[in-house]
Image (cartoon, rainbow, N blue to C red; front, side, top):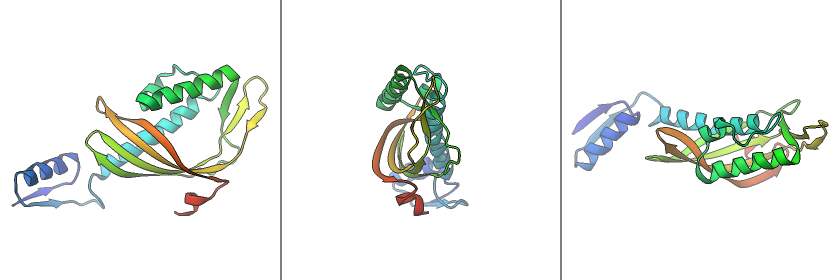
Length: 178
């Protein structure tokens, strides 16, 4: 048997390797859960994607902004670039709400090598405006339950898919569950 101190990426990799060799493994961890630092990194990158999406669509939307490629990959990158191009073409932009709810909770559900799945509860209360006049086009508030998929590309976590699971009008649903 072997005892491994630390349940970060390296400790868990060694534990997995020794267990696959038939060794009894004791994993000693001082944190609340395994791979906690990895969860923090994945969550920060996931939230970073939504921040970049909002920022790139504020002012004059720029579908070629490098921030989109920094935080998204594959079909999700294509989707966010298309959304940003549509906003540019239609003369629209994002603006923060006067009194935002500021509810966004992300939980890592699964990590498997270079792929991760997250669950997000977020209150969407950003405002969509016409760039030329400032006229408000959409200021509705809704709560979204989103399943996100992350992929590690060249050592960096990026959003590869975001699927709306459930939507409520106003601040509701999962926003009240915490």
